Every structure is written in structure tokens, then in C-alpha cells.
Figure 1 (spheres, helix red, strand yellow):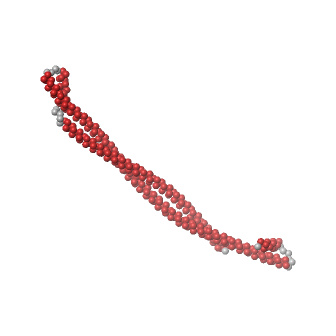
Figure 2 (tube, rainbow, N blue to C red):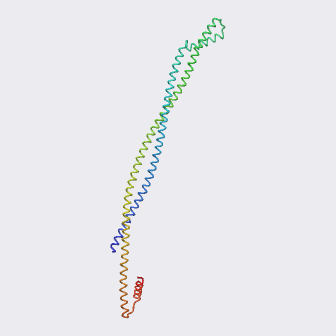
Figure 3 (spheres, rainbow, N blue to C red):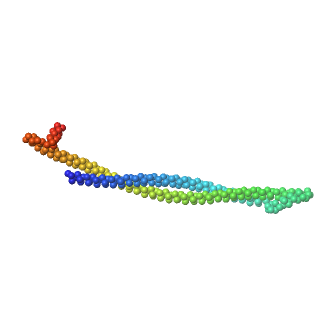
Amino acid sequence: MNEKLSEAREELGRILNEKKRLEQIFYELRDKIRDLNEKCRLLVEEINNLKLEYNRIRDDIKKANEKLSSIRNNIKEKKSIRRRIYNEINTIKEKANKPYKYVKNRLEELDKIIQLHPTEPNWEKNLIKEMKQLSIDMKIYKEVRRKREILMKIKLEEELLKFEALNIKRNLDEMRVKMSNIRLIINEKKDKLNRLIKEKEEIKGRLNQITVSLNELRMREIKLVESIKTYYETLKKEKEEKILHTLKIVADEARRKLREGGKLTKFEIEVLSMLDEMREDE
């Protein structure tokens, strides 16, 4: 019995040590899963923020393309207007009888003649007629100048639009590069997230195995504790029975002495008294 009890104690010690070792691994893996969960949460948050940034840039690109298309249409319209004004200028210029430089110089000359020299009626009449015709030509050239000013203004607006379109194109190129970089970063973070999830699943599998092993060890521990308890109770009972047997031998000897008129020892008296009490309790 003692040998079995010793073996049970040794087995229980091994189980407790193994259980302690597995529990330590279990808690370490559980902490690692918590750490992985936090890393996964942060990665998901980063990926979502990057997606928001990606969508925002995509919307900005859409708006920029729409604005660029509007500017290109505006430039086309202005080119069309310039061609129309060029044609109008050429048409108007054809109505003039004399070149602009001649008309300008001749009008200045005739104006001085009128102011400084008296003229005869017939000659003055011809002069006025010439001035009238020259004034018509000058009005044509003034209209040409006004339209050329309009052309310059339109051309300036067109150049400003081209400059704005160029800046939008540069901005679009930068945004497309930024989108491409964000896609790469998102893919990298998704790969990292997948690796973490895979690692987490592997750890969960190990945790499940350890949990099964711990449960088995606990069951074995309970059985061994019960066995050891049974051994102890059996040993206690055997010990009590041996003591009781010894006491009965002592009591039998004491009774023999009493029958023969002998004197009892203090121990024998106590044994007889103890046995009498035990019979009364029963």
C-alpha cells in the first residue's frame, strides 16, 4: 500500500509540474493573441484610413478631370471666337479704301490745312469729301483695333486657361502617383494583416491543444487525488485496526490478571476504560 501511495504521489507531482508548464505556455500564448489582436486592429484602422484617403484622392481626380475637360472646352470656344474675329477683321479691312498709315497721316495733314489755310469753296468741298471718306476708313480701322484688343484679351484668357490646365495636369500626375503609392501600402498592410491572422489562427490551434491537454491532466489529477485520499483512508483504517487489535490483546491480558487476582498497570486500566467507552458509543 505504501508503495502504491508513493507512486501515486510521484505521478501527481509530475502531473502538477506538467500542468504548471502548460498553464505558463497557455498564458503566454493568450497574451500573444491579445497582442496580435491589437496589431490587427491597428492595421485594419490604418487600412481603412488609407482607403478613405485613396477614395478622397480618386474624387479629387474626378473633379480635376471634369475641370480640365471644362477648361479644354473653354479653350476650344475661345479659339473658335478668335478665328471668327480674325475673319471679321479681314472682312472689315477689305472695306477700307486706303491703308491705315496713309489714312492717319492724310487726316492729320488735312486737319492742319483746314486750320491754317483758308480755302476756296470748291476746293474745300472736295477736301471735306476726302476727309469724310478718310473718316469712314479711320472708323473701320478703329473697329479693327477694337476687335484686335478683344483678340488680345481672349488670347490672354486662353493662355491663362492653358496655364491652369497645365497645373491641373501636373496635379493629376501627382495624385495618380500618390494613389499608386497608397495602393502599394494598402496591399503591403493587407499582406501583413493576413500573416498576423494566420499566426493568430496557428496560436489558437496550439491553445486548443494545450486546453485539451490541461483538461486531461486535471482529470488525471482529480483521479490521483481521490486515489491518494483512498490510500490514506485505507492506511488510517488499517492503522486503527492494528491499534485496536493491540488494545484488545492488552485488555484480554488485563482481564486475565483480574480473574487471577493480579494487579493492573495504569496503562491496562486506561485501555479497559477506553474499550468500555468505545462499546458505549457503539
